[in-house]
Length: 147
Length: 147
DNA sequence: CGGACTCATTGGATGCCCCAACGATAGGGC
DNA sequence: GCCCTATCGTTGGGGCATCCAATGAGTCCG
Image 1 (cartoon, helix red, strand yellow):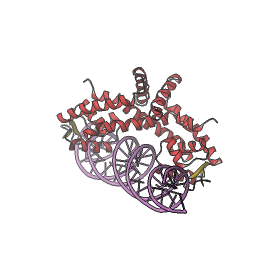
Image 2 (image 1 turned 180 degrees about the horizontal axis):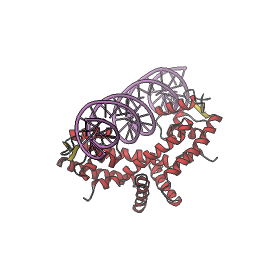
Image 3 (image 1 turned 45 degrees about the vertical axis):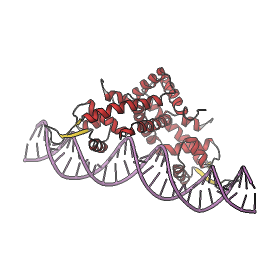
Image 4 (image 1 turned 135 degrees about the vertical axis):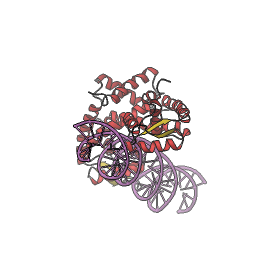
């Protein structure tokens, strides 16, 4: 029994959790200037990407709980970055769209977030960064694209 | 600007966060049978590793806040897995030690946690798993072992 | 028309991370 | 021996992210 601690510390779960926490803090710090949190940024990006979309749809794409989506969109709407309009053909739904301000903020946030990510990955060579990204992608998409 | 969403989803911060969340849930689920959470497991392992140790010391090694350490040790002690004894030469400190029950629980939890991790990493080949681990280790230890 | 489903929303819970303060204690410098 | 500083465990609070359950409104299919 050389070391339970080293075992646990070399456990992917532990490592990935730590790295994730640090990365989240860094990105959050970076885009705080825009008044957005990590998730707000993600939701904003998803909204921009999928044109007018319903909240449920955005939630499914990002893996975000509907409840949380409400809060994120509330904030984004209050900041004037997105709009919630009644869906033309389904009165249950909201058609969420990005405002020009939202697009601008997204551009700025994207740059900030990428800078933060670059900082996070600084210890790795570009090649290693690509490797890490590829591996993480496989782990991320695996459970979502089975079948 | 092909896709802001794809950009954000390929951002290491995002990916690592998602993978971390999933991994955490899996491990938590696995060791729930022992009545332990992720952090309890880690603290227990650290205690076992560093013999009798003070809470502050454990906290520093694991990067855990002293406040949270109190709660974790409270739980572990209530479960009879660790002991808080007065430190022989410094009455401020607690000498935290693992009980035999703690050692046994740690062994069982270690196995469960490793199984969960194996499941998390299942989409990758053993070689890729090692790569990922190595890369994450560098990212994790980089900010802690500078200088 | 009715039942099953979906949508947005509300309410509540948990885990993890961070900061500030407190009384008690220890240690160094004088 | 006495202050000053620092540390230790503890308490109190806050923020962010994830998840589950339930509800009222609305839609769709048979």
